[in-house]
Structure formats: structure tokens, C-alpha cells
Length: 231
Image (cartoon, rainbow, N blue to C red; front, side, top):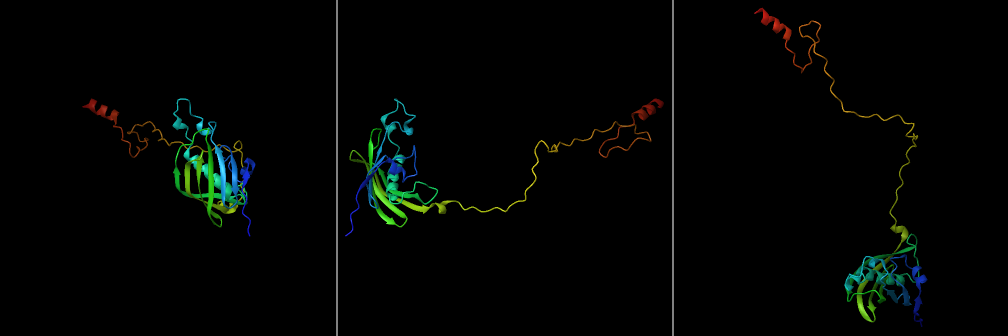
């Protein structure tokens, strides 16, 4: 006859030995009851000293102090993570089996959680499919439900399989390094400018060079003046 698993409790040191989360994202304070492979009960005390309340002042309404719903779900999922890794703790996400969040459904928020409340997370392992686990449960404050979780899926995968594949690059021949101080000044590129046209010579002179192809020939001013005077 198999022996019924005995419920045990876990302090903060045991929680940190199973979760990689640290301040300010470690959202499980204490485990009051755990039956490995079956169920877990954990607590999270909400205080006004948490960083999400840092920007709130006395002029904010009480509703502004409601604990963020995403963090409430995160806290419940971390409690499920403690149950998932209870028998094989591995807070190092670089080696061994890494806990991954797969998905959730049927999550319902019933009431706000405020500073001063102590949230009790109840987690039940409903199915175990090898390295894939399915959880369900509820969170309560003073016995009243504030969160219901119909299904959360988690998976355990080897860290080596999660690393990106690396390809070796071909080795390039080494090139001699030249310090900037010893390097010759780099050639600069300047905008080309048209050459300045030389002074026009007398077009009547035999020694005058031919005019540029697109440059008009100046009229022989001197010759025109002489013709006019003789007339």
C-alpha cells in the first residue's frame, strides 16, 4: 500500500532555491503547504512599499492602489512554478531544466487586492504530461476569491535546447594594424571647378589662339572703329 504524500511547508530560502525570480519580481513570500506532485498553498503579502506604488500620493483614489492584475497572475504562476520544480529544484536558467510559461485560459478577477491584504494562492496540478504540466486553482483574501484560474500550462525544457544556434565563421587572414597617427592623411574629395578662361587675345592677330568651342568670339572692335572713321 502506497503512503499518502505528506504536506510540508517552505520558507523563503526554499522558494529561492526553486525560482529564478528575484527582487522586485519574486512574488511568493511563503509556502504554507505543499504535497509534491499534487497541490500547493502559498502566500503573498501586498504592501504599499512595493515599487508599483511609488508614484502614488495622498490625492489618488483607493482604486489606484489596487494590486496590478498582471502581477497577481504572476504571483499565482510563481506558486505553481514552486510546485512544478519541487522535486527537482533548479533556479539557474542557464543549465538543467528551464521552466517555461506556455499559456493560460479561464482567468477571472473577482475583486481588487489592496495594500495590507494577504493573498492565499491555492494551486492544483490537474495533469502531468511528461515535461508539460497543467495547473488550476484560485487566489483568496480572507476566504473570499479574488482570482480564479481555470488552466495554466507550463513546460520544462533543457537549457541547451533554448540557446540560439551558433555558426562558426571562416577565419579571415590577419591584417597589419596601422595606427591612425602613422597613417598618411586620407585623400579628400573636392568639388571640381571649371578652369578660369584666359584673357581674350586680339582675334585679328595671327598669334591669337583659336577660341574655345562654346565661347563666342569678341567682335573686332578696333577694326570696326577704323572702318567707320574712313567712311
